[in-house]
Length: 491
Image (tube, helix red, strand yellow):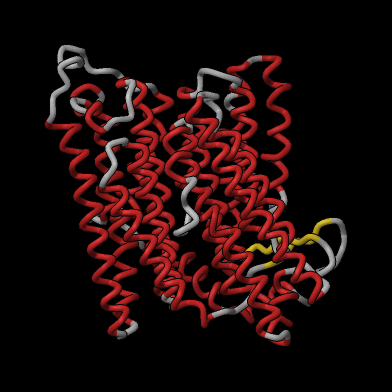
């Protein structure tokens, strides 16, 4: 068996090898993230059979649990590590073409560090290292948002940095309060004894942790940084922020609520916050004329839907949330990659500037259309499978209030369809006089490969969602089985 530690160690080591390879050839250096994520994808896939039998832990430094640093390898962790590697791999291929200006070596190093942070978040078994990996992800993200070093990018990066720093401070205070009470940082160890503490002494650290991680998750009202960050960052970074980074904030919030605190009484609030985030995100997206800001607000809405599904607290609801994480990661990565290529050719982020792209760059326009159809939830795309599961899980609760909430979810989907179909109309049915006589552009191989793979994944999983059923069902069951998590970690 390949050690799960390598999922963190190899990409981290490769990060610091990029300058060395850069001395040999910058062309070699830009492919290092591709190799790192390809390795992680293979390792994650190889771990699936073992975690499907039973989750296990790996201790670092020879210290036994709960005293040492340990990784918890369960179906949820392996699935998310694989998703991070797959999406990270495809975006890194795209970046070999797209990132040409500026300090490209720094870009690729920061990009790999971001993915190391994301992978560490889903694998770590102690709350302090959850914070450490979270900081690795966030600090890399701040720098990458400002990568273009123009005024909008620096302003967006600073706004993200300020909000993120406040969030990090809240997390650190929450961790300190928990350590002061329980004398341990291990998630399972704290979870075992947390119900022996007074409710008031637990509520404050829980509120601090949820708020702190909620900033990265872009949960309303903590999402002010997101639209500027997405619209100012290079499109490859917008893709990884939306496809992966904000999901890590969601993962941390959910792991804290379900596993660390076992706070099922909060789930009604989680449902409401998820629904509110969904509606505000979709209404805000509807009003945008800048395509990247539209996609950013759309991501806020989709995060709301994911939070809503987790709030159902049923095996089917959590499975639907994980399916939606997958569907959104693929679709939003595809949309940002497609839009990045369109902006590269049009020179503008305005939706009207995309007129005629259907004729000018047909492959990329088709990719955009498939990503949109999946996000809206049209069959046979993966977005339909995830949304159908969430609807089914909501109706299975047989609760009048939840049925009303579901009506608002469907309203948000209609709004989403309205603004996205307007963009598709612009791409295919409006003419751009400046580009009318220009010939079709052949799509670069480094662009065509990732967008074609993403299209195949969106359609393939949409047609045959059963390929993910087993691991997602196990992941959902493990998240609900708090006692099972504790027993799998502690001797």
